[in-house]
Length: 300
Image (cartoon, rainbow, N blue to C red; front, side, top):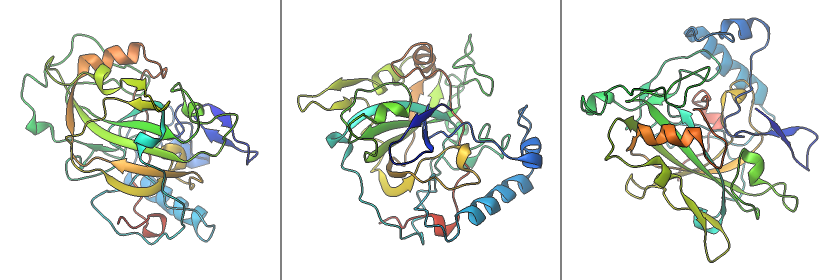
């Protein structure tokens, strides 16, 4: 992950994207155990130790609520307050990126992908592919969004983050595009949609789903966010990504997570990975689901 300067701290705000936190690694034995150099799945004990470290490193330090979470579980003990960001229609779209497997969990995407490599890859939550047809699951002829850690295939789940800011900006690469010289600490909102990839030319086009334009109001607006996947669950949380598996994220984010999955044509996702305004070419890793009640806000 690249780093972008932030005026109120000497530390940096993780970018490319901020919410992915992909450069987080473990120290010492944890790094080796987590399969840093490979894709082997780590033992349950590694994930348990990461959760213990997160609890220890945040206890009594005033961290706000964290993300991602199970949006069907509304309880939370964290009462650290911050103002919810405005509706995304009153903000500027600043970045779009996606994660391989869902970071959040809900009834429609509740199948655990496994512990993964301990650093965010091959983990997260999936849609039930038994609900797809044989034709939808037909293998593609070419690799899609291929990277060191993953290649997308029909039946895979992705979680798309449409990131919005109150800063006056133009959409672009990395979450650095969500800041401006005038505002280094804008309010942030992430409109979230989980998709399942299908080999079907009649399914939704990722080009359409990620289209945006500048409205008469002067705000850049995402034009393709689905409006038929249920009422979005709203909650207050943080940035996500495996870089925060063992430490708290200090950044405050308002989340809107749609509870139902939509189908998208995998070929169009592959085309988008080849060229887009956000310089995105692969699915990012996921942060462990946050289950510690002291790190979750109550969903109203």
